[in-house]
Image (cartoon, rainbow, N blue to C red):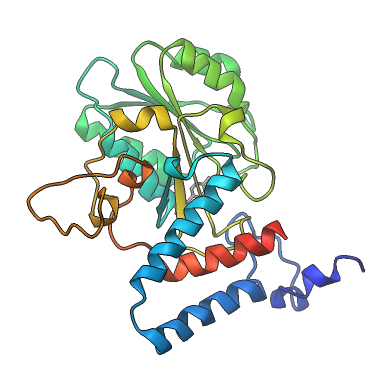
Length: 281
Ligand SMILES: Cc1ncc(COP(=O)(O)O)c(C=O)c1O
């Protein structure tokens, strides 16, 4: 068979028909090797911080390539939830624009993070589904001048429904609202182009169709928004100079790195880089 060379990379295919990538993609020989490479590096050199910082930047560039973004617009995180939380921590819900619109098709974590913002003054409206779809009229009724952000899954984790991003983004823009897209169930199956989608934020991760591992994910933040957003969720890897070790002040990066927090997920970055290389091949 012409695809044998691909199938041979996934040992599990010898035993099983694998239809669970929506939860966790199959493990390839490349990713196994990457975990081994990490262990070898640890044995040989101990703590390789300069190399690990380079790998973090390599992954940032790879993710930027996947999304048609600039590396300065990408934060590498431990989970999609980390990215959403960091964005939430930078929003102000004390004024009249305190409404977040989300949908019945969201992954629980994302909806839970928005509900947690009720403690900061946010009001959350979940646009109701009817069966396997969400009628356009329900978005029209939900979106108003109080809406600060619309948070949507590009593809629903439960039923595979794909949302009409362009239509909802245009509606959001008309009301002056920002758009956050959760592309976790799309990325790796079809191209995800932030320029074409023209959204403000996008999250995804490496454990599903990108065939990497749990514990490494990403957040895209549109460049124009960066100067105005100051996450209160932060840490030393979010600083302009990660080597500053300043305990007297928080001096965040000007780039989307300001949405990162502490030590990056080093082991998982090895795996994500190997997975991406294999996937692109
Ligand atoms: C659409 C969607 N968003 C988010 C997640 C999970 O995100 P996290 O990386 O925060 O666990 C999943 C995982 O199943 C998902 O399907």
